[in-house]
Length: 338
Ligand SMILES: [Zn+2]
Image (cartoon, rainbow, N blue to C red):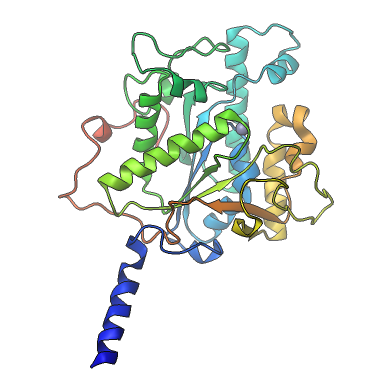
């Protein structure tokens, strides 16, 4: 009788396991991947997604899963890049804007190389170099943040996810919640809070907050949440760059080395990733060595402290469960698709 009770309790615990928040540490990503995997990558700028997760995206697609990439900004505030592209020391707002268009096209070409189709790419069009400033500014629609580069104070019309979206934290949060809710990922990946680029750590903040809010409204929407790093001191340029070399964790990183999850890439995936990186012509002109250092035989991820170790099956809401409000039920007004 006692054995039976113990078994029943153990089975009950196993049944509850995926729904109990952070039940265990994730040791490997491969067991998470199947035809039902829905990977959502949040990229602060066009190129971060390929540098950090170009191999993972290929593997998810190979497993029959789905991949959606969301760009927070179009990378249109990169002064050195615009100067080089336009051969001018004082770029105008329209030159910054044009640079964003170039980077968006490059992103679509790079992602196509990895197998991600354009309808699975979303550009939110928020201000490059200005994401952390959004957090400092109260959301007043009469006076949103204005990009010092493009001089815009709201995303372009064709990139709007929700109507009446301005450059402010509240509206960006609403758009991120909306795209997550619509896609219902089982796995979310973005840049981590330890990344030294302000747009990168702020992207983490926005995505994490959105996941927390959605998790409270829809407890079954609990994807595995992983982060990667792009900028940390001289990393990874200070590591061996020969063909077949491994990407090792950055020295002095404020996380124990044992916490890193290594995702080994197949040679074809490394080649695909390198090919995709090379599609970013505008960035390769400036950061060639840095970017190619990410095309190594592995990718490195960290499990977010609040992330479950298992994502469970893709969430299908019942008719009884509430949506995200009236705005959420409207189709996106612009080119962005779900
Ligand atoms: Zn970036």
